[in-house]
Structures are given as C-alpha cells and as structure tokens.
Image (cartoon, rainbow, N blue to C red):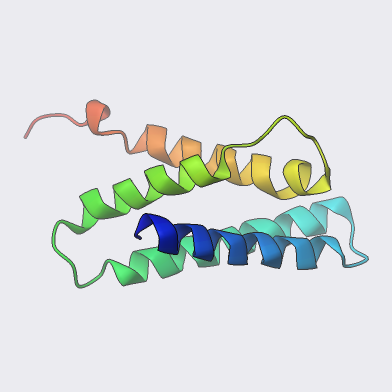
Length: 106
C-alpha cells in the first residue's frame, strides 16, 4: 500500500462512508455499514499482500499507514462520529493487539 495509492484508496473509502451517511438509516445502522466498508477495505489490503514476501510485517505497516490516515481531527461532524472515530479505534486496537513489542521470543 504505497503512500499515494493509500491516500487514493482511503478517499474512496471516505466517499463510500459519505454515501452511507446520506441514506435515511438509523445511526447504529450507518455505523455498522461504515464498519463493514472498513472491513472490506482492509480485506482488499490483505489480499494484495498474499503473494508478497514478509506478508505479516508488510500488512502491519499497511495498518500503520491506515491508522495515520484515519487519525481523527478536532471536528465532530457525523462522518467523524459515525465512521472515522470507530474505524480509528478498531485499527488502533488491532495494532496494539499485534504490536511487535508484545511478541514473545521463540
């Protein structure tokens, strides 16, 4: 996930989130739809790494890039509350759970 490509892919995800937010759905359904879009986005990233070398480390690096892209701003509009903050927390939690510093030596 090269940086410029990552930004383009991320903006496509944000566009998808905005499309969900325009729908007449409850806040909970909107949030579930946005999280589903995030999961699909991450699945695409993972599939791109299937044939590469050092897949776990490269995927971890992809998640670090995604964490930076998701870093929420100070504004609390519907997009931030329903999509960006929950997505950021999920990615951040995943990174903490898979942190290289938590790995035990073999």
